[in-house]
Length: 361
Image 1 (cartoon, rainbow, N blue to C red):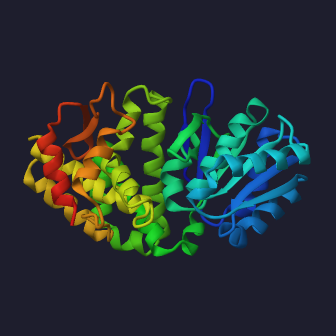
Image 2: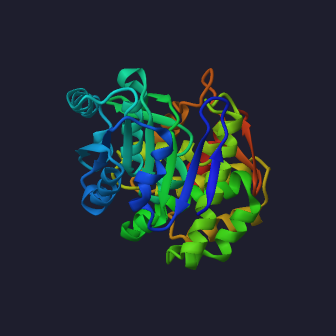
Image 3: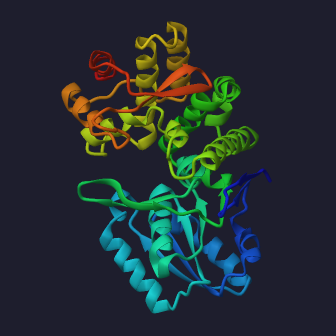
């Protein structure tokens, strides 16, 4: 079983990656000596598939498990849903030595982590991500949040889990579109940190799309290693951690312009990655060959290169409001070469609009 350590000054933890390991979760968390009360948070899709396996394993280790099932989807990351879960936790007597288990994709992990970070001023939680996107991205690094009606992830904190348990067998029940979505984030890691990973993805795209366990274990563990290394150096996004947003400035604008209904996050990231490489090219940092290999790799994983139902002026306006902007200047993550990026606020309006015109169909 591959293991990755997220090495932080006060909150180090392990990411454990395996196949068909959900039934071992009881043994996996025994080391923490939690009190016997646990709250399992999952959604109504994942609950039908995996909640019983997790509950049986926990109960075999003597835990008393209460379950809270949220409706699947981004709308569950809300104040109202958080309040319901707080009420459940209080009524069941969940104490500071108890723990929350987050079983699901990014929405479940974000919401459960936010609850854990605030309930009784913070109790332990375990991430059990079941989507590829959550396994390689949102479950690692401690960003937890709920949404506000004026924007996504505006209410949140940095709060690390005690452990991340990744069962690659869960991917077998994931819709193909969600596999593709997760692959976009893995490709991002190749761009920002590891040319060898980028090359491996290109050479093994068919095996990865077919969910070959050995190939998946390699790219998922490497993605976690990269994110862990970045988070180790910059836990609370003071500087370096911003490179994890490569491709995301445009992606978030596309998601917002299409009201989060047309594209999965990963599909928007795919378009954003292509846009970021184009912008780097127009900024005279990478050559046309880099644009070509980017296009080819994204196409191998069936990711879109252009956005439908978007307006260039609207996208430009949304980009200008990006949360990484300082004094009105957007900080762009630009590609210096495959495997290395820089942060720059010296990108011209003309270059940005040129890219937006190319990626809007």
